[in-house]
View 1 (cartoon, rainbow, N blue to C red):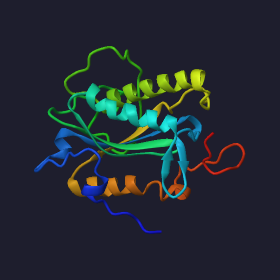
View 2: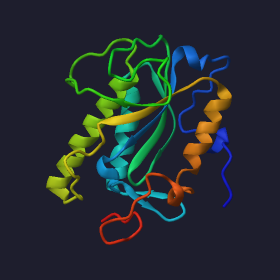
View 3: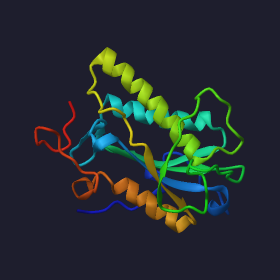
Length: 208
């Protein structure tokens, strides 16, 4: 199967092509968030990802995070049946990490555990990655729950998202483009993905 090469004119959803941009200083992060028990809730893959209504909710709140946190840019992302990959670029200020929130630039390629906070509280000028992911999880969970009650969406087991998430610091433009390619090709590689799951009836990533 042919792999797609990153093409900024085709694939780049939100332009952050900043000339001379120092990603290690400002903070560019590749993040992965998985549903609880790897439940396939966000759509179906038949050559490409076809998001369902729940998947559209995930995309909506991901885009809204750029408005909520004024000094971040959203780069390439993909919604998969049971997980989400995205690139966050924190601009305009250095990161100010807090213990346990996954906002430390020196911590690379690790699964982090978030902590719930009050959504209405104001954020620092430089939010941590943990702040952003925590808010995103809460907003998507709340809307998903409303639709379970009102529109009979497939219920999730206890929690919509796993408590932890994966965070990787992107150090340069070359690495950034490799990760973009990985995100773009994720639907093509679904059957070999470590998150690949079948439903209770044995159907491949089928969503009601």
